Length: 97
View 1 (cartoon, rainbow, N blue to C red):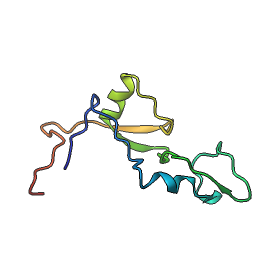
View 2: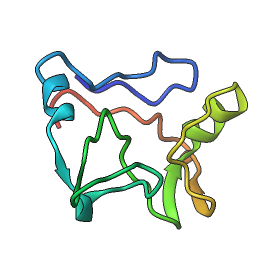
View 3: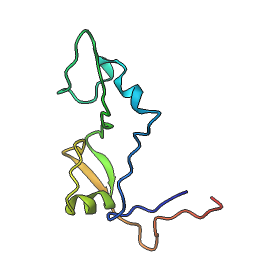
View 4: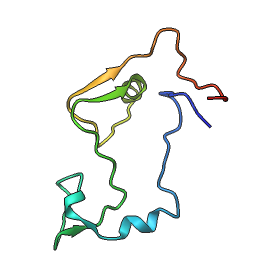
């Protein structure tokens, strides 16, 4: 089910119970997204590592609205472009799409 972006909405936690044990399996250092994570022997434990958002990424305007309300994402790039809402578009998808 599609839910329109909402800066006041509940933050989605995708770390489900079946996924959690996989976060404690060693991961190859070449896939490391955050250099400050400690690695030894070419491997490290991801431990719910957030996804990397590349510099220059497009961010939905609702992200900026949420940040203004106190949200502090650790993976926010320093340079990004905000995608404004499209005039006349309500960010919804019809059920038949």
